[in-house]
Image 1 (cartoon, rainbow, N blue to C red):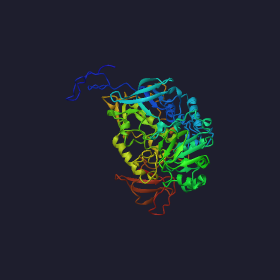
Image 2: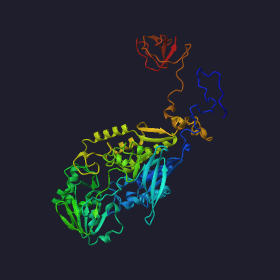
Image 3: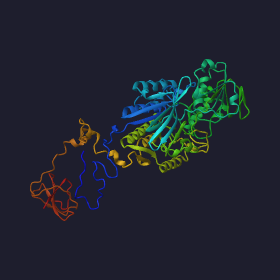
Image 4: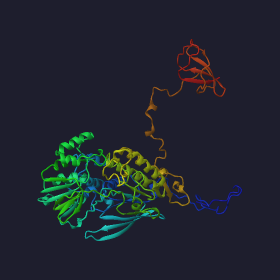
Length: 608
């Protein structure tokens, strides 16, 4: 392109400094970039996902299928896909919701072997998804993300990743990305309670989430085993071990509701628990005083049958001390044992398991040290270009988990696409918007069943409900999948003008010589009603007036008088602008004997 020339007609006072500039620029140094509007080719994106469980696999599939010019890397600390369903292999480990709610919408599974499928079957499903769609090529196994630090100048995340080799040695890898997606889950960081003397125990210590393959049915024979806990993991582990061990001792710290596999009223659950438990000491120990649903309800028919067996004994007291060969309860009960199974759950504080440092050097773990207050369960102010798949205020209590994960993935793809096409440097939720959401969440949950007096990972030690979304699963999915960009602080990469992504006025279609440049002329847009042949293509014809035109009468008719023949009637009408009209009822017989009758048929107005 040539240079601009100075025009003698420039307005008075116009600054001519630097007027000899190329086209598409100005004297302040802004050059309109030669980019195509909304084209993914404008910017190569690098996205890093942490975790190759349900969320990571979902992202691998959708980014591969729906986004362009995006390099996607998934770091997984384990040696295979599956996340919690790879790690959790304790006896009878299974989903405690119907198996069909554990599927992706693009890969339904008619082959589930059980209503509550075992962890091995769930892992096989995830493995097949990865094989069918070729998703493992995006994954780096035995890679643990150790640190993610936001670079405000570059608008990128700087990562430190530990690559673990077979011999246990570690290589530190540095990486960068435009978008960081936290998909490491929540229920995958097991915790052992701090019990005095645990380090002195001479027998075997196992957490349900870290069950060794070498500790199976053959190894259980003849053992005296203590199980700590009565939550979801214990409810499955106890009936799995009971037939094979010599003695099974279950320490129950908190009462819990146990359900059958079919929906039923709470009163029915209470009666069924009494029926299955059988003994009064067990019903007194297990059936809670708090409301049904205050803590997670587990399907527990097999558990209730197992604890009534002769080789099982329950103690309704927490364990306070462990010796070399025994555990001791708060009430003084001491039980000799060969192995201790901790079914004590996970770290559910929502603080990340690796260091995440956002804007101004703020640590996410430190920010959420007291209260985890996030944006819609997926983000946090001060942490740009970042989404989490299982944050605080999530629909953990109802609906399909994979459906909610799919909704978050829809938001993730929309964010990646917006950063890419609008050339955004950083996008993060506003603090005031996040504060308002958390106020709404707490107000909405006030008076709900989760406020009842129970011990639950849904709330913290002060009783604040951190885990629950203020609505149904469908409600969450609809809210999250429709991005509210007005809730975000957005900074653009172009320092001169935020609108630089508009480019030089061309769309992708106009850059493509083979494209249809009239997409608005589409058969899909046609309304079938338009082809209704019962409606004439032309209006009624007026023959006996000059300067005929169509209009609409604003004023009601003043009087009716006979027309040229008895098949028409004319109304003498004054329009809103003072002009006068004769109104004819076209092609409809009008009774001209009723003075003052209103013409109800189509009106044709003709200038007088």
